[in-house]
Amino acid sequence: MFDTTEDRKKMEGAIERFQKEMKKVRTGRAHPDMLSGVKVEVYGQMMPLNQAASITAADATLLVVTPFDPANIAAISNAIRADQALGLNPADDGRVIRVPIPALTEERRKEIVKTASSKVEEAKVALRNVREDARKAIKSAEELGEDAKKRAEKEIEELTKEFSDKIDAEFKAKSEEIMKI
Image (cartoon, rainbow, N blue to C red):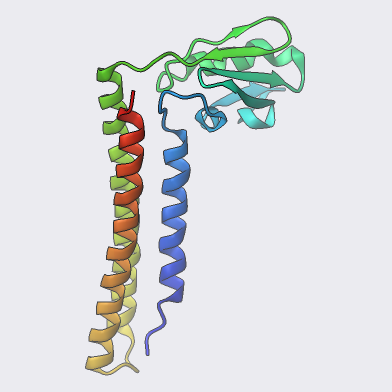
């Protein structure tokens, strides 16, 4: 019998990466994960923002970024402003950085859904790559008979469909969340 547990783990990894990417997508409400993709130059090297400051959501429309070292406020503020995909304009008072989250327009919401759909395609490509690798392993497994190979291929197909459906369900929920005013 062909073992699919390794393939299942790889597919679960693809789903986890997809979920992390979806957390970064803006929905109109402030969420600390929105800034997880921001890199800031601190002490001469680039590092993720969450390693240079703490990020909290003060309310639904405001993120508060508190640098661990107040000397880095300007660098952090500039890094947030420089990330065009976010479209945010931070303001600092010398101790903390306030990042107001503007309300999304209908056009911007549709644009965000379109961007999120590209993440869906990336996740599905990852699933298909795992499926392809599994198929190659099945075809090259000489100890398996033809019936066992067919069963294993069917099992891999079902696994791919299961995970693809999970991605579609998550995307549908996220799209509805984005489009909700």
